[in-house]
Length: 419
Ligand SMILES: *Cc1c(COP(=O)(O)O)cnc(C)c1O
Image (cartoon, rainbow, N blue to C red; front, side, top):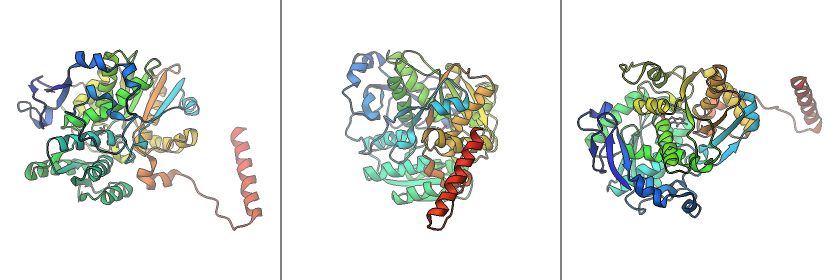
């Protein structure tokens, strides 16, 4: 049961209504965090009880912020599979590597965990219109869940949002405002519009209910790998809500006695968008340095991360680390991850695989350790980047001789590779 919303800076508590940030600490710092009655949750949220619950992310109701189940949107969210990826483990140099494929959510990204919660809460609070600013995935996700629930949606995207994501949200019936500027400018404009028009604000960083949705990935990992947890959980980081949510879920499963040991967190950022990693190095109390953001991984291209404090704290609490990866390393991972696993992630998703390779090189992760990487978005989300690194087809006339020629060539190439 949800008890209160607590400011992460001053600790002041608020009743769990539609409340975004702390009145005293302000919207830039005073992010709220949902607090539950864990004593009560422990009595009914057990391993045994879970066996008979629906295979989706609503199965953890004791630690979710819903007043009741009436407004749960109909699309299936969560309980995504975890794959043991032995060849990828070998390639990046760790003992064991699991992929949790969150690209299998209904709009094909991790963001569905948050949007489903956002829409459920918007309905609970009686809103008819929802809004968000997004680099793309949160947008298409919110639009999808709004469509499923019959809500109107206004979506603010930056100029450079990939086309498939824009197509998705237009098809879901959203009103799309493509802002001639960066994600950070789209974000500020959306905040102003929400205020002016009285919409429900789905922006994760300041809407603590959304992070409760992201938390369910951590809850699932805690249940799926309960007695055999990985040494590390690896998450790519933009605003920082995802990694903070995952950590909260892992911690809760540990506190409930279901997850036997807490993993460490590896946060992965792009070299061209390193604001959270830099803040982690400098410490939570250092003045926040505003920067630029450029990376091929559009979903983590964020100059002003809105949830850096939670993201820095989560990694610190877990005795984890941050690494940054170059666009070349991300593109390389975009090429080798699908080939070695059959799982096709978008650039921001495979950035976390590149992060594992990087953390191995820097000896942050030991070769004897195990890691779980969350694939946060499906590869079809950014097809242009994928095509750029995919290699090319063999264009042939419709004759068997032409086929034979290609077969011979590829066998020779394989032999040379293996030699
Ligand atoms: C949003 C997103 C992230 C990062 O989440 P943050 O909460 O912004 O840190 C990572 N990967 C993908 C595919 C995303 O859409």
